Length: 313
Image (tube, rainbow, N blue to C red; front, side, top):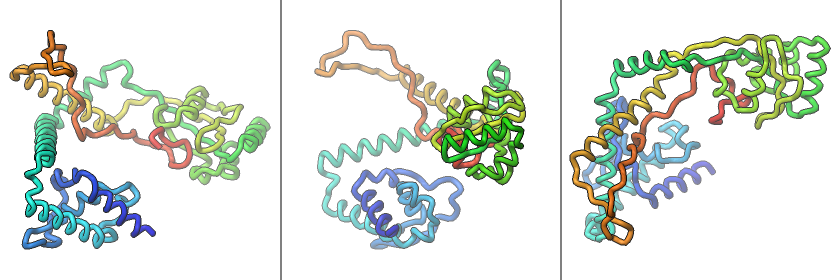
């Protein structure tokens, strides 16, 4: 069944715009060996890897050796179709010619942006930004060290709370009653920041002082929780934790400055939807964030999956 789904997914790629063909092999991909030839022209391993990156998540997680045969057949099909299109002069069609021009412009634009970001994003700049960030009042973030007991129902959670109010040991109850992966460690989640948890869990946990536990069950998408806080502290995010966001912010500024410089040197005329000239040119907006800029990553000490998981899950 999975093989049929994979073939269907590759078929969808065949019918969609081949964005993967516009990209270059990722840095550090190793030797880009030839895996096939079609009419004497080589197909490289990187061609297969690019197709694989366009597959649904469930297939991207599979090892290349599992996907290899089907991927190779599809890339050969892609090459054969492209060659036939060349033979039939499909590129001479005005619509195809326009689409090729747009694709070329997109590739050139993205290549310029990424080149500029690589050139101007240095380790020194990132550390300078981090040092500046450390001076801000909100740089230090509050963390709590908590345990929790996860149950399937509100009634079960209420029974747990009654036992805790009667003097039961939280860690022992967690080992016995919790259905979460942290049960063997007494429900221990370690230290975490507010944004690392789903909102309902975070609100309840950060409302507690050390030694307190929730007197009402806390409902999240994972079930019903009883939470206790062991300790609270204020901690500074490390450079490694901050680096993804620092890179994203710096990339945005680099692209904004690049576009601003290009606007200054360009002659730009604007027209209305009906083609008539605009009476006054509006102010230029800020440049959009760089395409492909790294998204912020979660900080260290992330909670276990299936329990009080990060908001992204």
